[in-house]
Length: 341
Ligand code: PLP
Ligand code: COI
Figure 1 (cartoon, protein in one colour):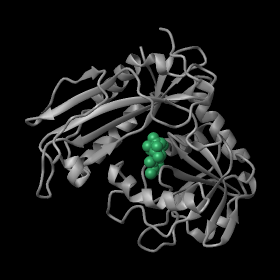
Figure 2 (spheres, protein in one colour; figure 1 turned 60 degrees about the vertical axis):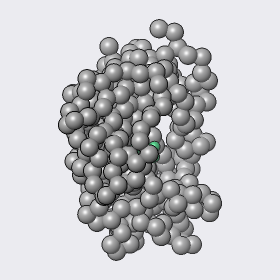
Figure 3 (cartoon, helix red, strand yellow; figure 1 turned 135 degrees about the vertical axis):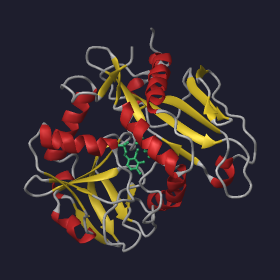
Figure 4 (tube, protein in one colour; figure 1 turned 180 degrees about the vertical axis):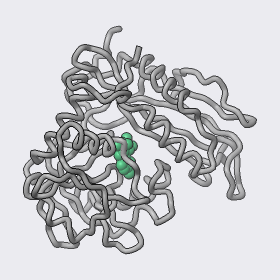
């Protein structure tokens, strides 16, 4: 297979159409067999549930080229499970987990020419998504749904590659207690768009959202979870029912414990404690681990001493191990790496 001639070293995080997408329709109470398509347009009724009441959820994962030239996907079963939770919460039908993983593999294989070659730090971003496709006018779930997977080759999520980010503590809320913050619903992201545009206008890279009930505890950003490091090298990450259970974070906690012998804590983090940490990073599929140098809380600057000028030493060890596993340089825990045949 001949690779496409793209400027692999300079890809940003944007959409670029690839050859094939996957599509399956849920009609009359059942999913059809699904197929690959070259058509990247979707034609549905103007009154479809997704347009009227935002009935949609999505996932994000990546395919990598390993050092020895294989194409692999990272923990697609975890994305399948998370999408199942999202579908149930949004009264959508579940796309079966085995079919989800199989569809991811088929879509990546069909777009192998777009999987960035080894060594460029770029990846094929995989975006499974599902939406209500039949008309609804009273508030209700749609009857019919479409599940799709698109792929797009990407580079770093934050412009300028790996550099320390500056965040602001947001006055907006991302997710309510007992709301949908813990699933990957499109509506959570619609909620956050005004907040990110405002943050950018004010010169910040991202928002630090606090818990909506008390505005005292650290939650997450619009597209990644937080990882903090204490002075004595403990890895601490927020625990909350209204943040997205990041597969990257879950993987990093395992790596910290099992590969790096670090102590880890998943617990509530008061905003007042943030000044005591020495490193901060944003973790997620798109963000990988992006270092945070400064958090500005209404004019009060909190500097992360060891991640102010790029990744801190503990974050770097986590990053090297995670990416080492993803590109096949470090042995992965069982089941983390799925080879695209
Ligand atoms: N939090 C939010 C709000 C996200 O959108 C994402 C991205 O998927 C994450 C966290 C990180 O999750 P994951 O590591 O599974 O990509
Ligand atoms: C991901 O990391 O996969 C996401 O969906 C986050 C999004 C902000 C791009």
